Image (cartoon, rainbow, N blue to C red):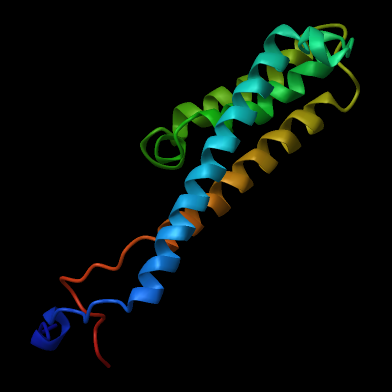
Length: 147
């Protein structure tokens, strides 16, 4: 298929208002990602070591482990577990979902709770990543192909 030379024409620069909104969106998304990471780190801590003393919660380890399943996708870089590390991430997820079932104190629907917690965290990061890519500056070296 022949390449159209018009497709390589540079794009006009974006309007200043659009550029300002793009930068504001990127800053907001950066703050949101930091909040996700901090929440994931706290969930991981709670899932592995129990709730912090300042919370006043006394949960058994089997119930608190659900937080670790939700925290792992929030802490790991999304480029890794959505890209080249998807198979190790799936293996880690399966360990997080199934390994607690070997303990006697696992709750009846613990597997479903751990799986659901992981899926909610993954969906949050996928939505964040989509918004991050949409707010990226346009590639001014190439125009969209013309019909």
